[in-house]
Image 1 (spheres, rainbow, N blue to C red):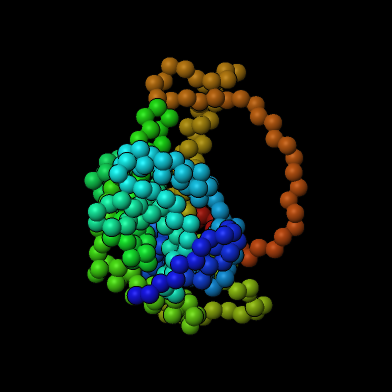
Image 2 (image 1 turned 90 degrees about the vertical axis):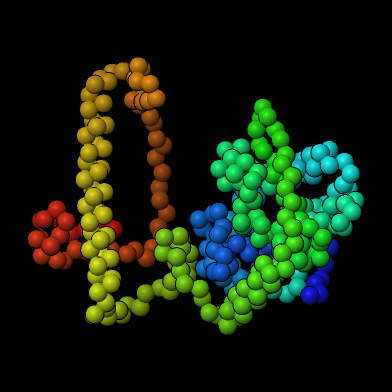
Length: 322
């Protein structure tokens, strides 16, 4: 499959190219995979980004900055650990239309041919848990690396994981072989998703992860308009389950407050506790500056439990609003 290589000369132009296709780092957000390690990176968010919805953290955040700052160090580490390789920054954006990729580095000097190198900075605890100590590369990174291999026609892929430890810095170099079937799947899913974006076919939301997304995408209410849910027993059951959860939370908060009040009473004028292995608690006076909240309009969901008292959790509890 032919691809286009565009030299990256400025960040703004590069970001604009990324907004026009499914990039290698976002392949994991495609509905067929949906394996991003970040809760908010869902298929619906990818759809919204490709439709032009602006997000405050879309082009930069702490994780992206960490990657940019440490990326040169990873290239240097790989050069020292694999001196037979010539490692150079890629500095180009690759695309075939539906897919796009910005490899971190190219690797030359291997008898198998050129490779792409994906640089990752990882906490040792994360490396031990999610990478199985180097025995397994997280699937979302495999997808990213295979996409970069495909668009650059590389002989193989390399993932370099810099273990960020102030006292025991190390860099693990792991290879990702080409996988034609997986690459065909990636391309087909990206093309399908981009067709849905053009035709304005939204993916189904994940209601446990897309809360912030829905606030942006839902239209403003029409005064007087009502949604008729007669016969929707599933939603009635979910609202009943919600009421039970709210009552459980209320009971838990009461229990938590009782424990905290007991500790406060025991502490009297002490500012901290000692002598309980594994626990630390302080009871100090803290000053908070006053502030004024600017006026704003927010669409608020309020739910009231209008069922007979005997059907409510806790019996005759008050109507719940949230």
